[in-house]
Length: 86
Image (tube, rainbow, N blue to C red; front, side):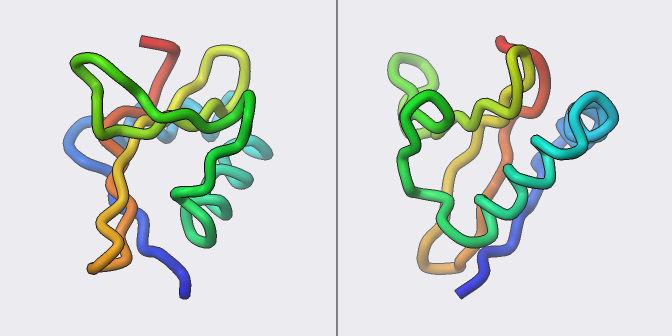
């Protein structure tokens, strides 16, 4: 089933910046979020640790990152960060 994607807070602008810089990579990330957001992809998706524990990070390109978490019950992907490597 397709997941909904929600941008939290001010990260909508970061998403727009990544879309302008890499529309293909952002479209790929969006498709990934809608279909298999919890699948780990080596070199592309990883589980974060430390103060970001509980978040996943999707690498859009060399510098663009999307950090998110998935509410599987509600079928929603919440993007907490969109922008350059933090």
